[in-house]
Image (cartoon, helix red, strand yellow):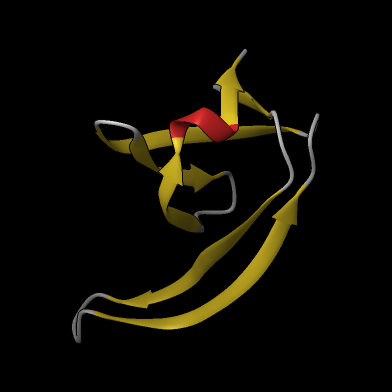
Amino acid sequence: MKIKFNKDVELQIIEGFDEEADVVTDTCSETFRKGEVHDVDIVDEEDEICTLQFGDGSCSYCVQKAWFEIL
């Protein structure tokens, strides 16, 4: 699905995860600007937060649903 950010948001992106050790191996911060459109999957939802998975497999946890709209 496509989402559009409705404000500037800096997200912590999980780029690598070791499933055997159950630890994050690679992270970065990325700024998403108001109006940017991205293709994502919402892989987990709870109340007003969700987890986004991007097309390259990276994820961002605890993303406020108020920060974007689904197109």
